Length: 423
Image (tube, rainbow, N blue to C red; front, side, top):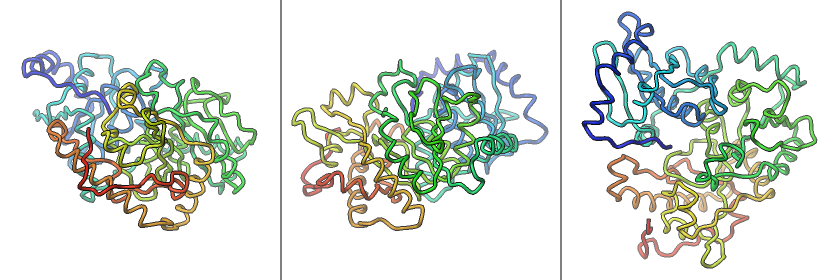
């Protein structure tokens, strides 16, 4: 997540000037109602589906039980990457307010905390801090307040699937692959990307077992190019509409996704997921019925695959830009077709309730993650932001069983007291 802006008290005072707050009050006044306890939250980067979905899900989960309604304010969503349907799945207590008042939307870039006014509370919090609070919430046993498909989306989607000839009882897997065609100007995020063509073996394995696969994304993505009618490439079909992506996130039985925007929507619907082509970060904690499949990490110095220990010693989960991986001497390589197929089969076994094949290996993986989390929690800058967690130190972290087959030696570990991550 991005968007934190450390500001001086003087700058904050200017942003919260009487004139700007008057604009904000005028914008939300028609939505307040009588005696309704209201929280207002502003998403500054709502044109990106990851921000609109994640920030909405977190605010809903953390605050819905404390307020009669939550008003989510965004800028105008006339943008290639925006999707208004995200705000249609938040439930009746969350109201979306779209505005062209840029000075109001800019408040969403600030970080200040909870501000109380006569008729509403205003939460001004950076996405980083919001995610950190969400991690603390879920790790303490707090729940995700689930998304729900609106009657309109259900009606549209059900009719659409019927028109495609999808049997009502057919199992559906959702596929999303972040590729370099999406926001191609964001080269700093290329390390997160993958090639959808490498998923064809996984799609074959699903179709052979009676599944339908729906690939979501936008028209800038390369075509799926799979011959089966049971592999539906939504963004490249005639009549494509943004609501289809959101509907499929709620309709699917599980998702094959990456750490990218649609993953948040699938999680918000509480659907099982295989998170493939993962480059670990601090923010996204695993939940039950989720499997993870990391990319390969190769040392540019030796040309050899890095162990998990070596990867953590580089402080790699703290890196958020392609050039940072370059400077750290780490080459990030996406999953092979065989890895993706085998992890998909692992996911089907997970859906059937099968436990991990090697629980000791899974536990060792979590223990190594917790050692790194201890290091993260010792960094003053991380303490100041509240980002003291590491996602794969969670008790729910579970790698695909086949990951360890494809990466022998990945968990080789010297004595835990010998080294600390370099950061």
